[in-house]
Amino acid sequence: MSDFSVIAASRTQKWVAGTLVVAYAVITLLPLLWIIATGFKSPSDAIAYPPKVIFEPTLEGYVNLFTTRTRQTAEFLAANPPQTWYEEIVRKYDMVIAGPSRFGARFMNSVIIGFVSTFLSVFLGTLAAYAFSRFRVPLKDDLMFFILSTRMMPPIAVAIPIFLMFRALGLSDTHAGMIMLYTAVNLSLAVWLLKGFIDEIPREYEEAALIDGYTRFQAFYKVVLPQAATGIASTAIFCLIFAWNEYAFAVLLTSGTAQTAPPFIPTIIGVGGQDWPAVAAGATIFLLPVVVFTILLRKHLLRGITFGAVRK
Image 1: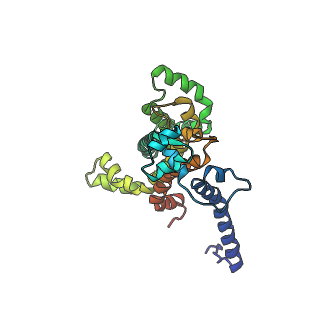
Image 2 (image 1 turned 90 degrees about the vertical axis):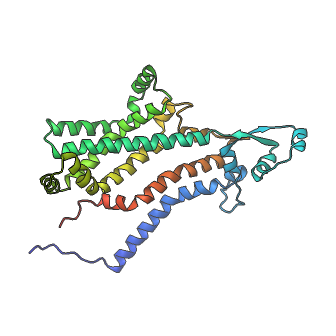
């Protein structure tokens, strides 16, 4: 018999562990909560010193985020009274709403580029990981190390060559160019993560399917993919987080048509300079898709982190 034994944690150990977890959660969530609160502050409250914890909430930041405004004369304002609540908000600055801002288009660019590149990274990464896991690939270890080495290098280190290549190919400021770039950057991570998951799936499952008359593709689709769903979901979350938050390439390679939200949000200017409530409102809205996506896949994520840790 093994001398290894599991000792239950004492009450003190549980209390210390719980305290550390709560403290870590508070420290982690406090900046996020402050950003969310700033989105509901007025410009003066947002830059007040000492910082205001208790304030009168307003939607001015969200109105400024989604609209463009122009200053008008007193005669024009008197002849055209505000018709909606958001028009009333901008009237106190002697301004009227001229139209929608560019935030909606930039946000949709992030959605398109982020989710499409994540899908392609996971799709191609699953096929490559399955090949490395199940077939005898010449120089497999060398190829896997080469794939991993592309992840070691900071992406911004190759920014200038990529910029020149994109300009020559006409891919600058295009959705297709950004999708291909983010897919290429995320592919190495997807291959390495998914290979580990597929290695844990017994080969006997596929062999039994092949004996029953399945083709190799049918065995992969009907046997391996369901078993690897946990790893696929976990990999998709990590790939989306990178593509969603990426800033350097987005600044360098986009300026209008394909510009995503990260380089646009810091440029929001208000009446007296940087419009911090609008910036905070944009950051809050920008967080929502990734948070929702992660919550929907949270069970797979937790199972994926511990996958293979316990063996029967």
